[in-house]
Length: 210
Image (tube, rainbow, N blue to C red):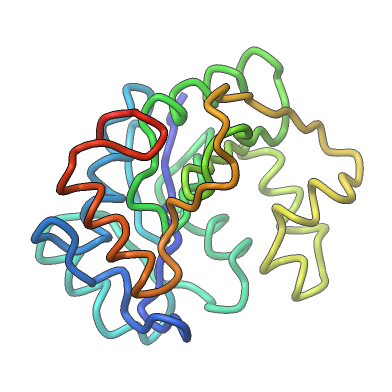
């Protein structure tokens, strides 16, 4: 049973161009996402799924011996599916590319909950934004890849599944942290500056250590 984490990241963000390469604690934000994801005990491989024509991420990954591949910028479902195939995944853990504070414990416990419930798709809830994790069984991902046709659904398939399951078995892992009004993701330069302050203090606003 191989569990592969896929981090979807691109440098062409419109609100904050090349944010994944912006420095946080003297290292690119992407480094922190990869490092924190890789600390999860149940993850076998960490892979970065970037987009065709990206100027920065393939170079960074190659230089640092990080697994990566390129896919369609407008089809996240295809990007994740092809990466899962490439690295022979049985279970896929999706991590968002704007999440430098992704939580290792949430990753592991969401994976455990996925196995316990035998769901097709399991996602974490009840935590600050930016610590989201989703776990997908390869069989369900393959079925989604064939069945979901609309471009907007292939781009935002999490929303599609949670609003219209289409017969997929869904489960939620309640992280029990709360603070859903807090934003730990990075969408703007202001978000990054805020997280830099937290790194300097060594603590998150909810009291957990970084």
